[in-house]
Amino acid sequence: MLKKRRFSSGDIPSSSLSDIAFLLLVFFLVTTTVDMDKGLGIILPAEGQEFEMHRSNILNCLINSTGGVLLGEDPVDIAEISKKVREKMLENENIIISVKSHEKTKYEDYIKVIDQLKQANAKISIAETG
Amino acid sequence: MNFRKKTKLSSEIPTSSMPDIIFMLLIFFMVTTVLRTYSGLPIELPRAKKIAKLASKRHTTHVWLSKDGYISIQDKGHKVDDVRHTIWGIRAADPQLTISMKTDKNTKMGLVVAVQNEFRKAEALKLNYSTLTAMPTN
Image (spheres, each protein chain N blue to C red):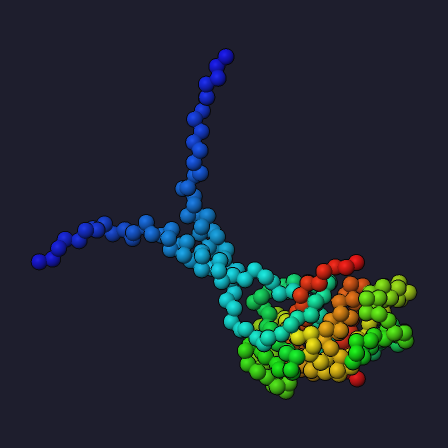
């Protein structure tokens, strides 16, 4: 003898729909990471596409292993780079800053220099270590 | 004068559209969620001021460089010579690839430049030096 089923209508029960939606919502709320990665964007030169630049349009920026910076021929304070580069850009608007660092330079110093150059909106070229 | 209330306003928040709102929120979070898959190396990021946000999480691959000289891409340790091969594979799958370099601030530049040269050989040229936000002083 089979008992008669209590729910005879063919509807899917929708009373718990909102509970399911809430659970899913909470799951995605928890797993979403809003903090986007931030940083200094840079485009590397393609391999084999090195091009010659006129010497007067290049400003060398050398970083040594202790964090000292040589801009052109003069040693500068890291905090001053942005100002100095802006001055140079007023003299020559096509100037490209070629950043070279010593093998033992700390990454932090390098980032500080790149940050300063970015603040001056300079064109940056990353040279291979010499 | 007649001070009687003309309309009877109900003070209840209408709840009939609540499921719609919940569904909208649900869909929003479902679409924006990218499940975190890789954890990387313990590092201390440097700080910078002039920073930009990465355009898309989906087209980003993180490369971790620790101060001890370890390289980690997608939770696998790499030697400098292997980086090219791995990045080439990722780059082939996603031409819009941006590499986010998560480098410890005490890492030596010799390693960073060596890894960058590998990226160039793998034709992955869009790079982002991941940094924290520095307080603007001037």
